[in-house]
Image (cartoon, rainbow, N blue to C red; front, side, top):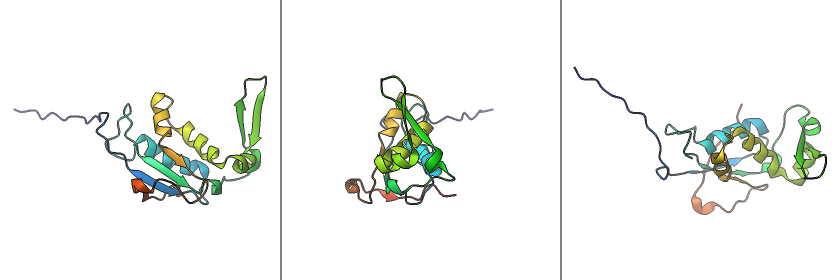
Length: 149
C-alpha cells in the first residue's frame, strides 16, 4: 500500500516575476479601490501567495484626484498626524484632496496591508499619479478594472 504525499507550495525570494498593472481611479470609491489594490500588492490574487514572501505586483494608479467617498465623508472624515509639538494636526478629507490627492489613497491602502516590515516593500510598489500620464511605459503595464461594486 502506497501513500501519496501532497506537498505544499511555498514561494521563495527571487522566484516571483512581478507584473505591472494600470488602474484608472476616476469616480471610484476610495475603500473599494484600496482593498482591491492591497490584494494585488500582497499577491493574494495569485495561487502562489505566501505570507512571508513579497509575491505581489506593481500597481500604477492614474487620476487619483478624481476618487470619491460615499455619504458625507468629504466633510466629516478627518486625517490626523503628529508634528512633534503638543497637540495634533487635523484636516478634512476635502482639503486633503485639494492639497495632496495621492495621500488619500496611499493611506487607505497602507492601512489595509499587513503591519510588518514586508508592508513597506509592498507599499513601494504602489505608484500614484494625479493625472493620466505616468513614466512607467517601458514596463508595459496592463489595464485592469478595480473597485467595482
